[in-house]
Amino acid sequence: MKKKPRLKCLMCEELCKRSTTKFCSQKCANRYRSENKLRRGGPKKKLTNKECLYCKKIFSPIRQTSKFCSHVCAGKYRFHIKKETSFNTIGVARMKKLSPQDKAKYAKSVEKARKFTSKYTKGIGGTRKDLGHYVRSRWEANICRWLKYLNINYYYEKDSFVLLDGITELIYTPDLKIFDNIYIEIKGWETDNSIRKRKLMPWQHPHVSIMYITEAEYKKISKEFKDIIPEWEYDTRHGR
Image (cartoon, rainbow, N blue to C red; front, side, top):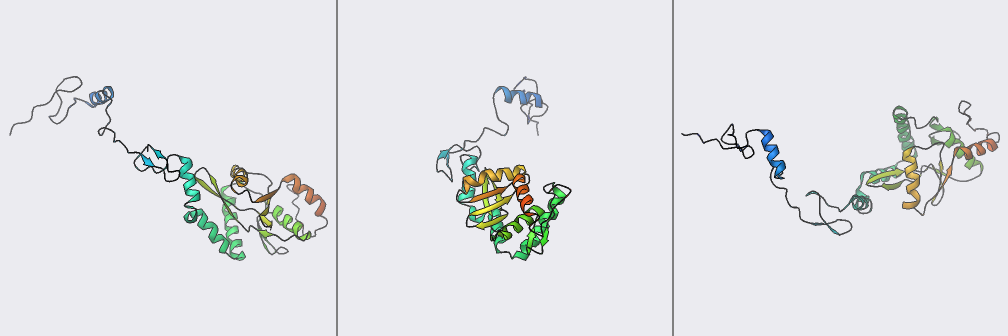
């Protein structure tokens, strides 16, 4: 059986090393593709226009699996249409069904994990006997005592809200609920994540009103009520 003759290189016209190749080297092959604007693996497939799942506009997809014309539409679709089946929303629904004891256990486990992973808070979390429920810090405990002294009923971490930050879902749970759609949030200092949540809440949940107690406001309350309320906790190390 006769061997097939070796072909001339398409680029430099020298004989190829094998009869099955069209180029004498990889360098010639790359140069030939570059000069002729050829794509490795053959010509690029032409993708047909599609209809965006959210806004229903016709768009040219980047890849075959594209379903949305932009990241904005993808995020809105996930938030508005698939909201009931998303993982975070299911998590909120489960948290609402938990008993106060189970919520306290869950909060303790989160608090332990947080101590190892971040410097989020210097407060001491635990169940206060005079309050009858778990709190994450001395500040939260004292504000709860302040509300009890003023005969204002409150619910600790009663409701959670889903927030959409681009295509990312965030869960925001205010510290205290005092009236319908009125909440209190105790903020000694803020992380980048909490700042994002604070900015998104009035835009995505305009019916909800949140009263923020900052460090300055907390110190005013503490100065007035720490000697009146016997269970008031005062941290001499941090001036709280």
